[in-house]
Length: 374
Image (cartoon, rainbow, N blue to C red; front, side, top):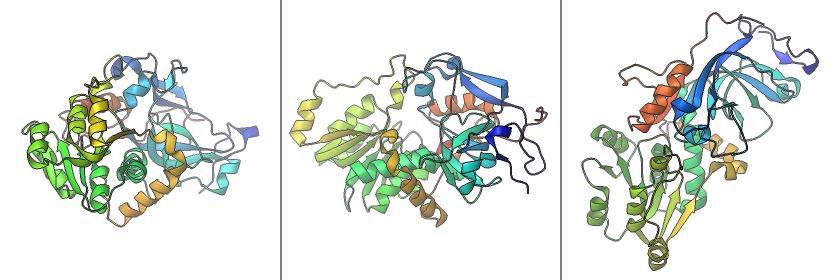
């Protein structure tokens, strides 16, 4: 197999990869208007130039990309207000290296499967920096089950390790427990020998949570969460892994035990609002925390990137040994079928915000046909 290494002085001279030249153009999603309405904010462009990797970069042909609740925060411009449209979107992908800069060839090779966390994954090809610990990670093969580990798994692992103070016998409440990151919080808390309570929206998801070891799944559509917690956990819960916000946040605060810790890793209930806020009854919050010596901790993965590579490596090892389930949802149960191609990202976002997914939502990008060649 010939290696497509990019010498920057001959940057357009790509070689073939597995018998097929890298195309000149590609499809990708672009944020063309700032809005939390993903369909309003994002446009599918079909004739974008395939980007060139710089000296320390990889060019990755994406095969699977992950959909995250925070994609609409990004499309609304909430993470970096200085960035103006148009700009790329998508946080993570798995695929093969099809070209690379000269200095990147010391660690990577053409044809190598990689997983990465880097902006711009909602595209057929993405340039990924090879030099930082939080970007490209070599993986044994290209499969969708790797994707949940990159952002969702790392968020659960680092936040619980750094902020959760888990130990045997502690009671841990995980909200949205059957989702992309909740599934890992459940399993990691069980590995720490905690008693785990998980919220979800259906009996099918309750069954999934039981398969992960969750001690008390709660279908909040059948059992009011606050009532269950007051009745079955009158002394409170020690740790809450919270990603929903709004009324669920209020219930979680009320359910904290003395010295309890609430970890806020998101508040999906507020993301679709124009303000990006999730209304909570904060007026009594200081008194509630003071009365219990309880605490609330926010967690944003970007502030812990120095720990990212070690976390992902650990999660990959657990997964390879069969000690960590990585549930993906490719949309097989959606009436319109699997999530195939970039055009299905819009449908996948809708699917997520209606609470239909079990595990991490993943979109498959099949090989494109008919693109012009370099």
